[in-house]
Image (cartoon, rainbow, N blue to C red):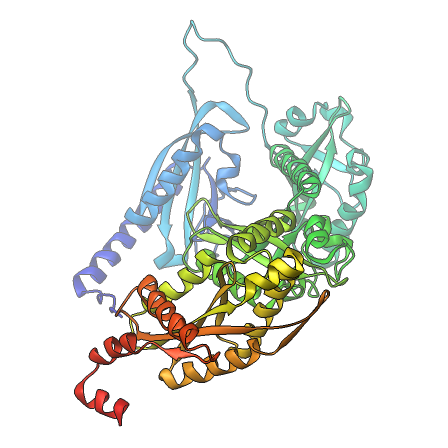
Length: 582
């Protein structure tokens, strides 16, 4: 971590000299402009009490929240620029127009007295200089209505006086206001809040702020922020100063946002997709009712109406709770997808399966997209959840038809050959074996008892092959009465021959068919090799050759293809070959 450079003696001296110059400039300004309006500002630009050490010469004070609130909108950029220059150079001045007199320029001074008094000083010097008029050929615009005004009230809320800006903002005459209660102009729904703020101001003496609707003379309502300053029972004053700022534009914008939010909520509730919004910590921000219908079969699952109406969900509606119907594999897949979105900022699509309370297994596609703030910072994720159960089941059925034999439910020819090829393409030295089984005397049985009996017999043969082989092995039907068993990761040919003997014994026993009992026997050939030494077609040809040797012998015993074994041994070291041959 780097250390900020230390201030040199030269820097300290320069800062001291600048502070002295600003202090002298302040004294000159106060002396030469007794009509200036003054206020003290904190480092963030808000008006603060004037320090007693600042020697004002009877100057009037500026009251309110910030100086910029009283400047016309077109000149606020100038105020910001002057503010920055003053904090950098110690002092800055420029011309702006105030809301109460937008037709005349005033000179705005900012003086940085933080080193001396802990505040910045603002001085507004009025002038008679008129602001530039519009061109002759330009359309004359009506003067902008003031947005800032003040009035004075007594302890009981009776109007004592008001400025011209207040009369322009609300359309009253001074005679219609003086001696009347201002409460009569407050919207009935806001009166309780206004009275509470007034009582607090009187009892504590502290400034109070309220937002309320103030009635115009034409009967319309204006949203304003009012600030109450208690100047009661002071030697030089006995009133409450009320500062009023027009915030109707802000409130209109808020109402427009609320209307948009309501429209969005109605749209999301009507969508056929479930919606789920998460923050960067995977907390649930929002979900619609459709999400509950998809994942749980009904909208009442562990969720109150607040969440379904777009409000922030309660603690019970955690992500884990909403997704508890997902299978273990689906949870892992979703977790990885969320990591890609929330950690890496990469949109993800993930298919998940889940089980409803009724026990039905269903499927959904979750399309997860990043949510970003205007700055580009990641703020969370939004997931669209679509029920794809029907299409997933149709796809699974198509995959099954493309993988398994329709009669025996064993792998079909292309599927079992592909599985063998994948085993032989592994980048290790594991040994793979195939067992080729051909049924003896199947055709006479098929011709005598009929094709239905033949199909029934093939189904029983496939079942016995699966039982006789290992759980990690695959059984496939090559066609007709020929079957192939794939043995994975075997230590040597001995294991393959053990499985082959079990198969011969199992297939050679009696079969009970619906048309009667039949006796059958199979010819079985075995071939083994290591990965990378031959293709699937080559290995199966070796097993097929061994199967014909078994058929020639006629004893229903398996035969190991020694050629394939020899080629597999040639790939190993002399030591390994000696170990294998004893």
